[in-house]
Amino acid sequence: MRNVTMTIWVMVMSVCLCAMPAFGWTQFNDGGTHDITATINDDVWVDYESPGMETTVNLLPGGAVDSIQGHEDSVINLVGGLIDSSLYAYDSSHVNIFSGSTNTLLTYDESQANMSGGVSYWAKAEDNSQIYFSGGSISSYFMVYNNSRLVLSGGLIGDELAVADSGVIIIFGSDFAVDGNPVGYAELTSILGGECYDEPSRLLTGTLLNGDLVDNRFYIGNDSSIVLAVPGDFDGDNDVDGVDFGFWQAGYPMASGATPSNGDADQDGDVDGVDFGIW
Image 1 (cartoon, rainbow, N blue to C red):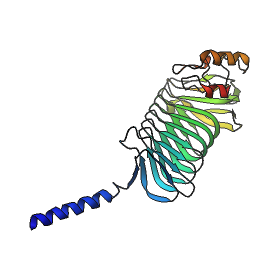
Image 2 (image 1 turned 30 degrees about the vertical axis):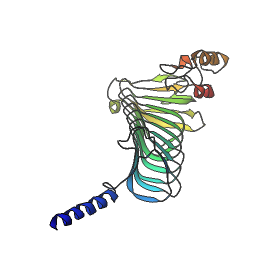
Image 3 (image 1 turned 180 degrees about the horizontal axis):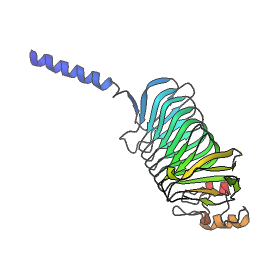
Image 4 (image 1 turned 180 degrees about the vertical axis):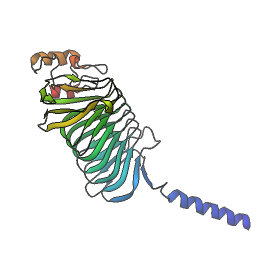
């Protein structure tokens, strides 16, 4: 009788444990699409240790979570709502921010974020990741480290830009000046050849591609750069014309290793329809 009682007790405990959330996480890893429209008082993890699932989570107006982590090629869409802490992108996952707000946007591990609206207090790209920023607002600072890249064509950044450890910031716009001195289209690099915050602070002003203004202090570490670029100027003569189209046409459809002289306008290493649209 004692053995039967113990067996039943173990079975009941197993069922209860399987139904409990693990350490305050809510997990989505089934390859489906999930809409969050109400408050979840948990951290949300998507495709954690679940490669190949490509689960999509949409945070919609009215939705709120503590944080969201995207893993393993998952897709996170912030269409509204609130992330109280951080929005993380790991393991080649994708994040799209259209509206809503998060305290922090953090990308790692060859992941990619596209921000065209919404608000984040600060943001950082690290470990071979990319952030495309075309609208919305970063209230404080933006950091780019460890072979990562920020492509900036619109939006507002409230504080400083910092780039280090072979990072690159590419800024599409016009009327650029550094410390009040016009610079045109150029590649800005380290002055002293040292660590990022050992460098002197400089002020970049100008107008972004969408008409938003740049007025930010910046720091550039050794082996890193800020590229001030003319969208679609593939031959580097500071205008966009039919000659530049010829460069794009000659480079299309390179899948890797492309440079601006091949027609790669967004500098993502290939030549495709996106680059043609920028031209």
